[in-house]
Structure formats: structure tokens, C-alpha cells
Amino acid sequence: MNRLRKIGERIVEVMLTLSGSITSLAILLIILFLFKEGIGLFNNPEIEKGYVLCLNSSNPVEKLTPYQIKQIFDSEIENWKEAGGTDGEIMLFRFDEIFNMYSDEELGEDYALLPQKLGEVIAQNPDIIAFFPEKYLPEGNRSVKKLPLENIQVQDFFGGKEWLPTATPMAQFGVLPLILGTLWVSLFAILIALPLGLGVAIYLSELANERTRKLLKPTIELLAGIPSVVYGFFGLAVIVPLIQRTGHLPVGETALAGSLILAVMALPTIITLAEDAMRNTPRAMREAGLALGATQWQTIYSVVIPYAASGITAAVVLGIGRAIGETMAVLMVTGNAAVMPHSLFEPVRTIPATIAAELGEAPAGGTHYQALFLLGCILFIITMIISISAEVISKKQINQGL
Image (cartoon, rainbow, N blue to C red):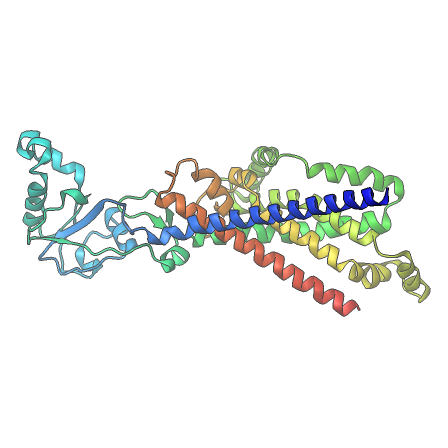
């Protein structure tokens, strides 16, 4: 009988070990796949694949930055002098325009003469900048100068201030507004949720009677099970109009609306975990504090909270993780504008909301697709840094307590 029991225990042990190994391996493979897809972004050219930018050979400009090209095609830069060239009004030329200039007969069968015609257009206009498919590049035409282009740069991605992944001819993958938008909304959400959550946790653990606690605790835990889209609808119907009216704003979809919704969503996690940690404080420690002459409040902040610091820290970390990783509710109430945040009363866009809104439209394996995967990598790193920091703080508090 003992032999069979030992065999059964051994089988269970092996199954649990195997389950843990498979789970760990799956998580590792997911992380590797995420980073592999994301890092591939920096192997892509700055301009759309298969296209080139060409100038007249007489133009002294030898190189343009991605942001300068974007400004030129948006008509924000209209003179070559602003881009490092000589005084002259920039002439924009897009590929479709060639078909308005020449008939199909003039372009030849299967557009065989199209490269020649493009070369003529560029040669005749010294201030032109032409954007067209590379296969129609007029080889051998000395009047045509192809602009040198590099792969997407790391500094442009992390330091760029514009996120326009579908811009033509030069997509803008500046992730800085998305990172700051995520941190901006999450920070103020935690500043709102943390004091409220700890206050409710202290009340339920130390002050509320058993009847009140049994009524409030399940109600609070029930809030954690509400789908985020429901919170989003609540924000759109109640919080957004309230902010718009109170602040006399043109729109109510702002960073403040996102922070308030995230604070409400993070509260159940913070309250539940913090309250459980406080209730696990040994009764003997409470009685020792009271026996030494401490009041109930002195016992709470001098004995209970320090003892439960590890659990409270875990509650805060999970609350921050809920705020940073939330997608749908934030997407619905923040205005979804990828701009640098300067105020809580302006629209912003977060990393999770960007991934959710754009992944379905991004061609698989393309530059936009890889950029979204890299956003997932950034979100993973931010969450990991928060978790490690919380673990370090928690251990430090425990060691100080000992």
C-alpha cells in the first residue's frame, strides 16, 4: 500500500514538474517571439519598401532626415533653403502624376518608356523631389540623383515625437508620445487609487464590524469581474461629459478621464490584496502594541502596516500593472490622439490602446506590424521594471522589519 502511494506521489510530482516546465518554456517562447518580431523593425528602410526618392542632380541637398521628408510632403517645408539647399520652391512629384502628363501610348507598351519619361520630368525641374517605385528608376540618367536612405534608426523610434505609421512616403514611428501617454495616465490613476484603496483596506481590516465587512468585501471583489468595455461605456456616458462641462473643454476624452477610469478599475485589486495582507498580521502583534500604550491608530500605522508592507506592495504593483496594461476602457475615453501630453485635460494615446486599434489594419510582417510588436516589447519591459522594483522594495522592507 505504501509502495503504491509512493508511486502515485512520484507520478504527481513528475506531472507538476512537467507542467511547470512546459508553462515556463511557453512563456519564454512567447517573449522570444515578441522581441524577434519587434527588433526586425530596424532592418527595414526608412521609406516604404520598393520606392525611392529622387532629386535633380543640380540640387546640392545630399541627405534628408525622415522628419524633413515628412515635412516636405506635408508642405510644412516649401523651400529647399529650409532643408539645407539653395533658395527655390520645392516641387512635389508623386508617381500618379506621370499618368496625367503622358498618355498610355507615350508611355509605351507595358509602360516600357515610363523610366525615361520620369527621368525627363526630373531633369526639367531642378527643384523637384519625386517619389515613385524603384523599378521605374531611370538608370543611367545623370540628371537624376537618388537620395540615400538608411534603415529605421533606434534613436528615431525611441526619440521621435510623431506616431504616423501610415504616412507616405515616410512613415513616422516616434514612440515617445505613446510611452509618455501610458505613464501619464497610469501615474495619475495610481495617485488616485492608492490612497483610496489603502484607506478602504484599513477600514475593512481594522475598523469595520464583521457584518459590514461581509457586505462590502464581496461587493468590491465583484467590481474586479466587470468587463473593461463596461467601464469604458460608463466613462463615455458619465465621466467624459462631466469633465467636458466642468472644465469647459471642447472634448471630454482626455487623460484625466482615462486616469479616473483606471483608478476605479485598479481599486478592487489594491483593496482586496492590501486588506488580506493586513488581516494576516498576527493578533499577538496588535495586542502587544496596545499593551505598550499605543492607540488603535498608532497600532495600525506602526505595527499592522509595516508588517503587511510586502502584501501592500504587491497590491500596488498589481494595481499599476492593471493600469498600464488596460486597453479597451482607455481607448474609449482618452481621445486616442498620439500627441505629446502636456496636461491631464488633453487627449492622449497609450501603448495598449495603440496596439489594439492598429494591429488589425497592419499587414502581417510589414513595418507597421513589427512596430506594434516592438510596442509590446516596451510594455513588457515597463511592467518588468515595475515588478522588479516592487520586489526589491518589498525585500528591503522585510529585512528592515527583521
